[in-house]
Length: 214
Image (cartoon, rainbow, N blue to C red):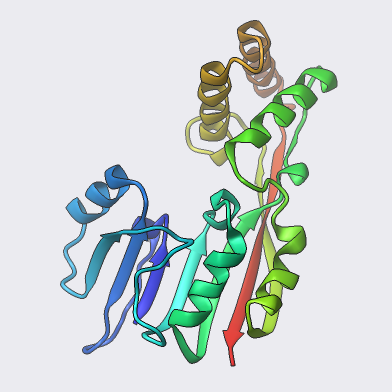
């Protein structure tokens, strides 16, 4: 059985004739969306807390957390729970971002620095990957493989990740009022201008940890 916490709507997995996939999230909206797009009888969804998994011990073969653990206040409790529910030999895949490594080309470095600093409030640990290897080992996981994949955008339009990220950041910071609305407007205008000039650049690194339960 495969356990997926968060962002499970993007996965296409085959569980076999007797297997199943369970997607867990704290967002009822996401659960409703995922269920409405599910046509597979071996896929199920459940509301749950990553730091307090209400699941049987040694009941899953695989577990995946994609861009989730950095939002969990008690990451160690979450990893301990995942270790508990995995069978011996089971594997865990965790994907997260170190937000210090997110890069935009900009005409105003100080403004971007303020925006990125304020954005750190959107998650519990904006630098989680730096400590994740040690946390996995402390939770009882055995061999851990660490790799990563870069995301690079050289244009600014709705087809790329950074376009949606700018919208998320702007909405979040407007609600928090931690960055002046004018700064946000000028930041977006600067990105649009750089795009028109063929000078737009964005990159981030997704850090991938693959751990085994002894």
